[in-house]
Length: 113
Length: 117
Image (cartoon, rainbow over all chains, first blue to last red; front, side, top):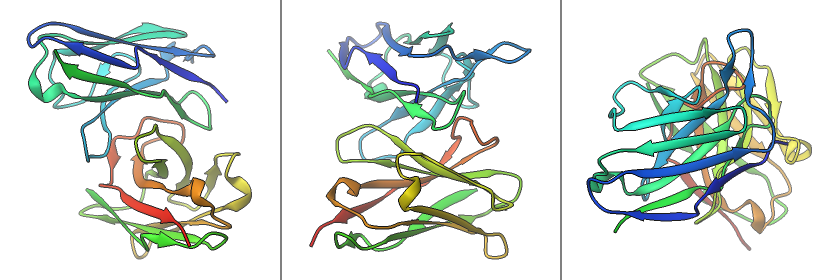
């Protein structure tokens, strides 16, 4: 199965600053004639289920603030949160869906400095 | 559309864990329906998904113990995991995707299942 590795495990950023989270796949996630990356990002706040933020590596879901952005391709991906807000405190997971079993990274915990 | 799990919160070792996910305010048709679990304080593990027509896909690590089913008439789908051990203790989520291998755009609140005697 594909192994997803996130870094760092935890991160503390000041309000209004930028947070950069990384996700690395053990196999390339870029496939298809339209060359899309089969990579999603989720936000999980304490006591809640994960919430889909970004699919196809960079496609923000409806209602997700534009301070969240995804980038990267093939095996290396980044979630950037600009202008960090208090409500962004959460654990963030990446997930590959290029093949089953779909797998998740171990998560990055984001706190306010 | 909303998802809600139901089932026992405590299961004895070696017994079968059974959960149901009810789809409300929408139809179970035209989607794939998945189960994902999360041991306390840990990461997410894909368990399996089932198409609304009944075709399942199982995580190989659980396949020998796992059965997924769907009831289109009653708008719910179910999970059955046999021969459970304490390692199966987790929060169990049901979720929706548009394709089989896909991101999960809708999640249930989650239900904690403890395996203990």
